Amino acid sequence: MFTASKILVPVDFSDTSRAALSFAVQWASDQNAELVLLHVEAGLDKEIQNRIEQAPDESVVEDAINFDEHALMEAYELERVRCAEAGKVLGDIPVQVRVTGGSWIEVALQMVDELQLDLIVTATHGRKGLRGLLWGSVSEQLVNKAPCSVFIVKPRGFPYLRD
Image 1: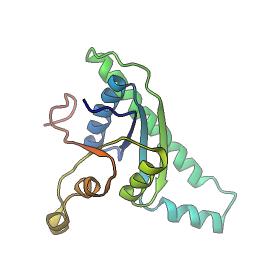
Image 2: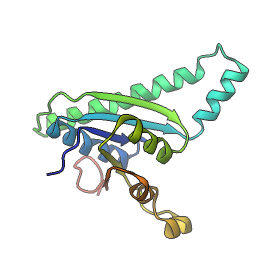
Image 3: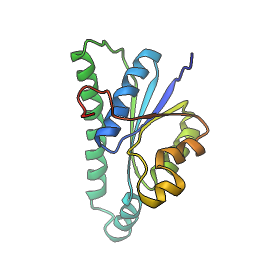
């Protein structure tokens, strides 16, 4: 049986990423694994650099990061409540939250090496347009590049999401 001690979950707060989070929370509880919740804002790295150069005393970026970190923990706690309501008792799960900027695939790949992650649980929105047809979905690209296992979740079958 496959086991994982550290699981990365990229979260963009969409229904599909919440489905991945739901799966990962349950898997982490069953495996006594640690969860790393990741939210990547595409322009955040540039915004941080601009703020440092233009107004180093402003806390706008820090406030935005804190807001997203809080939102990640709220999403995690919501999944715990939903599991409890469904009758699934979860164990203690160590959780880290990370909010950063850049390309989420590149950030995820860097974190796999940095944190020695065993598994990435991500959602898919499916292929988009001509680019998706030629290169596959972003999740498919992650499968091809990741040095660890990647579990891709579709939102179908989760009771609180529309099928």
